[in-house]
Length: 215
Image (cartoon, rainbow, N blue to C red):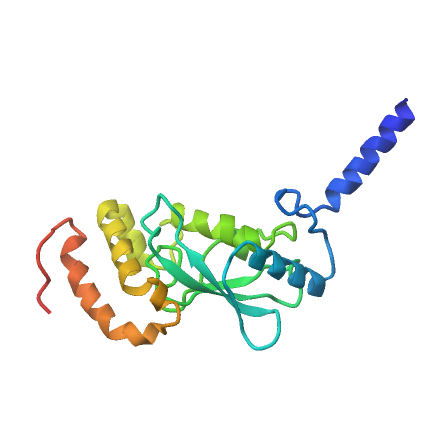
């Protein structure tokens, strides 16, 4: 009896240690594989999850993904084009992700679109996959901004000073830069609008609902 219990625990531990996607029961078939095989499997899973994926060149290491802002957040009306780059060592090394069209967020650099997210930059594990990035990590980033560790200092300061004004600015960025038709637009195409935006929000930062600021 003790011998059977010992071997039962032994095999259970082996199964858990070699099931990197145990946190994603929706996809129990994904197991540890070679980097090239994992890239292929994870990309297929992402496509099967109804995400729109646009490949860059002919390989599987660079592509765009269409991402919708999460409900119950000021980002819910926005649609963003996310660039994903998978390193040769993926999934042992984290993917690189960035927003192509503009987003107003303390932890996203407004110019480059790069993201400050611990699970991507520091605590990535091969148990995670691309579906986790788009169904868990990015939604959490938008739902729970961290103004204490900003890439956009102006957004972080506004969020801490006046949350209502911050939420309104997020919504206006969504309306200006993150409509479905903006997915293919380049950031520089609307650069002339951005300076007007800065003037428009000079007053609203202190909850002044006045007309447009003087240019």
